[in-house]
Amino acid sequence: MGYEMARVEIYTGMFCGYCSAAKKLLQQKGVAFEETDVTGTPGARETMIKRAKGGRSVPQIFINGEHIGGCDDLYALDSAGKLDARLGLV
Image 1 (tube, rainbow, N blue to C red):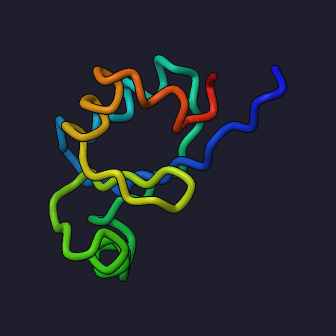
Image 2 (image 1 turned 90 degrees about the vertical axis):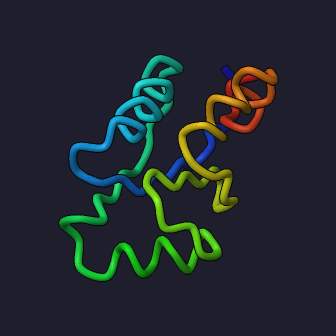
């Protein structure tokens, strides 16, 4: 393939439909991601808020360390045709 897959991190919460939708899109694209459940990991919510510059809702998604936002932002990137390039798929 020759392309380097992006590092994707996603902060999630239990029973979060938006988290499930974001993960589903990534899975459909065959992209591996690191998931941190902020409800079950001590200190994770504080880390997420700091990294997301105040973003408190889940999911918060990072691609190669860059904060891209939540589920709606992920789908907006995909709709705009910009997600695959960010993920290293093209």
